[in-house]
Image (cartoon, rainbow over all chains, first blue to last red; front, side, top):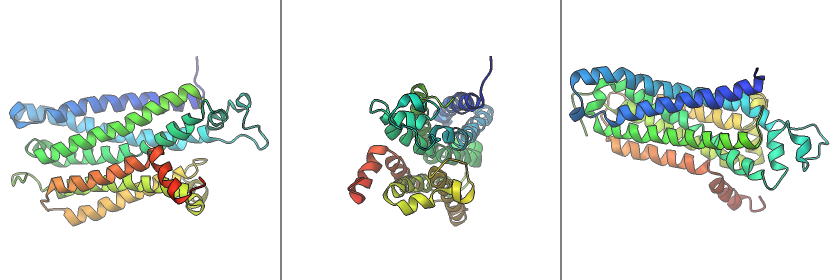
Amino acid sequence: MQFTDREFWAVIHGLVLGTLFLLAFGGGLAGLWSLKEKYLTAEGLAERSPRLWVGTSVMAVVAWLTVITGTFIVYPWYRAAPPEGTDLTNQAGLLDFPRYWLLASDNTAEWHTFAMEWKEHVAWLAPFLATAVAFAVLYYGTQLVRRGDVRRGVLVFFTLAFVAAGIAGLMGAFITKAAPVA
Amino acid sequence: MQDVQTKPNGPVAASFVAAGIASATVGIFVVLNEISTEVNGFLKFDASFGIGKGVGPLSGKVTLGVIAFVISWVVLHFALRGKEVNFNRWLGIALVFVFVGFALTFPPVFEFIVGIFVPEA
C-alpha cells in the first residue's frame, strides 16, 4: 500500500486540508453566530474566545496552504502538455495529461472550460477573505462581542470564504473523478 | 455602531477592503488574460520570474492578487488606524469588490465580457 507523489499531494490538497478547512469553518461559524452579549457571561466569553481565535486562524492558514499546494504543486500536473505530435482528439493517448484528456471529447471538455476555469480562480478568494476574518477576530478579541457591526461583517466574509472554497472543492472533486492527476 | 469602550474599527475595515481589492484584482486579470495576448504573456510569471513551474498565466493572476492584497492592506491600515469609521459603508465597498471578484472568475461572465472585446473568441 503506497502513494505516488501525485496521489500524496492530491490527498494533502483536497482531502487533508479540505477536511481541516471544513472543521475550522464549522467551529468558527458556530462561535461567531452565538457571540452575543445576551448569550454569554464574562466567563463564557473568556472560555470561548481562544476557540474562536484558533478556528478562524486555522481556517485562514489552511485556505492559504490549500491554494498554494493546489496552484503550484498539483495544477502543473493537471495542465502538463503531451509531446508534440500527439493526437489531441484521441483520449486513449492522453491519460497522463488530464487537461488535454478532458478537452479531447465534447462529453468531457466542460470539466475544463467551466469547472476547472472556475475552480482555479475562485479558490484564491478564500484566503483573502479568511485572512481578513482572522485579523478581525485577533484584533478585537473578547471586545468583538460588543461590536455587532463588525461581527456581522465578519460573519458575511467568513461565509463568502467558505462559499469560494466550497465551489473550488466541489469542482475539484468532480474533475478528479473525471480525470485524476495521479 | 460606535462603541467608545472598544478599539476603533478602522484597521478591520482596512483588512476587509483589502481582501475585496485582492479578489477584484484576480477577477480583472482573469478577463484581461483572455482579451489580450500581451497580458497573457505578461502573466506567465512562472516563465518570467520562476514563480511556479508549469503554472502558466495563473501564476501571474494570483501573484498580482496577493501583491494587491498586501499593498492595499498596508496603505489602508495606515490611513485608517486609530479611526472609528462607518463600518457598514466600508463593508459595502468591500462587498462590491468581492462581488466583482466572484463575478469575473465565473466562466460564463468572463466569457461574455471577453466576447464583447474579442468577438471572434
